[in-house]
Length: 515
Image 1 (cartoon, rainbow, N blue to C red):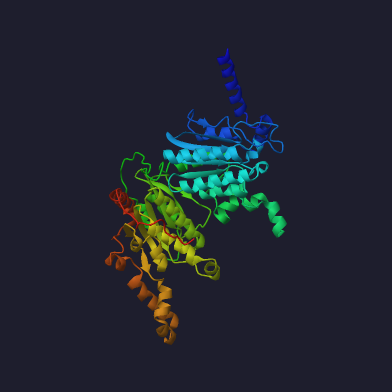
Image 2 (image 1 turned 135 degrees about the horizontal axis):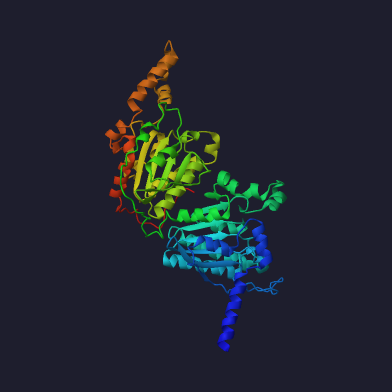
């Protein structure tokens, strides 16, 4: 009889835990177009694979009315399961329970998941939907956030950490996602900010909505805080599952490798992708699509710093990271945002042994007082530092322009690139022919009877001498000048050759990246 009662009690508690904050609050969540924490977990994991941990944990404070009701789980669902057959840890904050607010027990559950993920070398995914710190628990809540931040930092570069923002994320709550590798947001229902619209209005007298201040669009296009945006929660979860498919389990694991049968690797369309005029733009994504496995390119940070394209793809079935200048936007120049975007992506790939492919068409750094006063020197150095520090296989393909310091920064052999190829259309020089001619032949041009004609003549002379890849190839700075159509084949072979690359940086505690 005692056993029967014990079993009944267990079933009762489990049912209570599954109810979260109750039917009314679940219905309110659905009315806002949002799923509950448990529904999100069901979508995230392979069917029947999720194992919940800490289901019976309850909050500990009894102040300010918290003694009136006990909520099992304390507002967060935690556990592990399989995603596409791989073990992954996850937590999902439950907004139906005290607004998903974080307190002592809530934080301990998340810390437990992070500890297990590191110990067992598995990715962790956080589904964030919380009103912030639970004010009834005071400093205990703040300490809980700090405990999570510490673990995020210790796990950085050890296991992939992904954060999906599925509701409010304000105040201290924003810093855990900010410490993770990738952030995704849902349009219209998620937002992130350190101080909300009311505080902004009080302090600065500026009126702004939550969406304009910290919505998905604002962070995708203006701040660059979020790497992905999604139209709804279901596509967000599917998007993160796709992202995970490109990533290894941990820093010591090999990159995912799908079965691949080699065939005709010639891509004739690449022979015509570069316009005849060096001033005419083209879309680097067309080059990427021709080089990688069909429909395998997953762009990261798509709406931010559009002069730089970064993302994951597969080449002959293996995951690679791609960093490319985008001639279709600002001529592909490097600026502050493009440099930090590229640098961060390079460092992630290097941390997790993901080979890097660089596609280069860069006329230089963006000039102007705005760039100089806001630190293009320091920010540009971040990209330079990231490439120079990286020890993964690194291959560069120069498609057209490679001018000035930007040539050095974009994974040149001088900073440790393993292989550098150039198309016949490549122009590797200190600067463009027009500007160079104006400087070198300034006196000849100014004293000529027809300055314009003389300038054009000298420009042609300079271009003939430098606007090609053969001087660089003669010095060994470029390993081979190749036909564009042969590029995919060359890359497959070169990355295969570099597969077992071993490189070590000098012994040190850590470098001092220019932040």
